[in-house]
Length: 179
Length: 388
Image 1 (cartoon, rainbow over the protein chains, first blue to last red):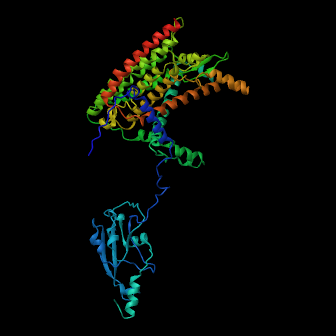
Image 2 (image 1 turned 45 degrees about the horizontal axis):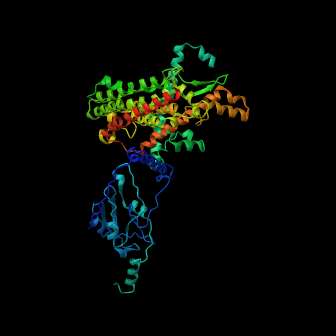
Image 3 (image 1 turned 90 degrees about the vertical axis):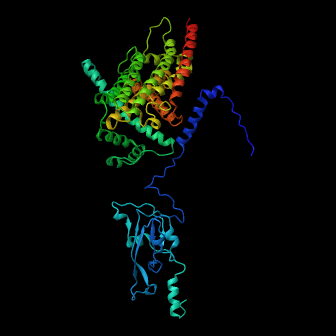
């Protein structure tokens, strides 16, 4: 590695008075003064949210309105801060989606614990839990900051589903080749 | 109205003038603090405070929004907060001096305004009569004498706080003010040497300085900043140091002294310190304008009387030479220059980083003072040669 010796010139008289430097600095600050402002005035202006943004985790329904979560509890296990608490429940046999067998009876995400890591979304085999675009959460109490199941579905809404695997499974069962 | 005023007892006149000073300087201090916030924000690429609004002003279209964006109502919000918040008195302080310090800060700030002329009007014979609360002949000397008393408030505050950082801030303030007072005074002597040429009546009046800069001819009409740029530069640098502005922000350098001399202060007492600081800035830039920027003369080589003469010649309207119009115009011109001066203070604040304490001392004693003395000698000899 070659060494480059930087020549240190003694300061000229003009440099020692600081005046040209200060004038240069004033020019720079003036440029900043007249330049358009950088600030986004938040409540009126909203940031553009990039695709695959990791906002508040939500639960989603498939296009037929079926809740996609099958309460396998993988997200609950993987969640690093243990923000998710699921109480599994059975889907009643008279329901149209009885063949799915399981669904969450209760699904709570404590947003005071959630770290928005997205591991729940990554691990979910049903693509049922999705971190969507909402980025600000507020509440007056700790209880208000826990998202319950109905709130999670309200936030999540419906997302398109290319596979509809449970419908395929049901159709296959009816044709006699379940696997 | 005017006759009624002049019929009043002189004491009542003086009280009214005093009230006028307080009523003008206090809000100006508040507006300056808002201007400081806005200019700082703009230089940093932010819009600055622009949210507070009084509902019934919000109903006025355009104007209401404009005032809101300007942050005008934040001034009131700030003032209200400062007035009504708890005024804590720390346990270990010397109560008498602790409370005295902000009051002492206000006294020179409000007193010096009285000796600064801020406008002029033309009397019936076309002579320019300066407008001012007390047009005393010692003018600048009074400003220097009283404004340097301001340092006592910083020392008192630093000492009475019974805490190390304020104490250091107070010590620095006193050392810095003494160092720069010298070069500041020396830098303006050439101006008064030039005005008080042998054979003329001696004066230190600021109004006379402006009068001198509005004479006809090339040398008569030139502002002193053109005739004595070095003096103006030394005066400006000393002014920054005297008003404790960046880059000479030693007494309250937030980085190393928490808040400097006002660390232990809060609420209204803290606010008084700031109003005093801004009042010093206003007066400082006013004095600079009067001494070096031609006071209320609109442009170099164009005096107020010339401007009024031209306007009168063009329009021929009688109201143009009315004292009220001329007075307001001259105050407007003067205030415009003062406002630019204050803006310059803020502009420099975001341009030049704070000096280290030893650098401040070195600059003051080893650079500015010899420069000021050399400048004085050169001009003294020059003026002696010119005027014989």
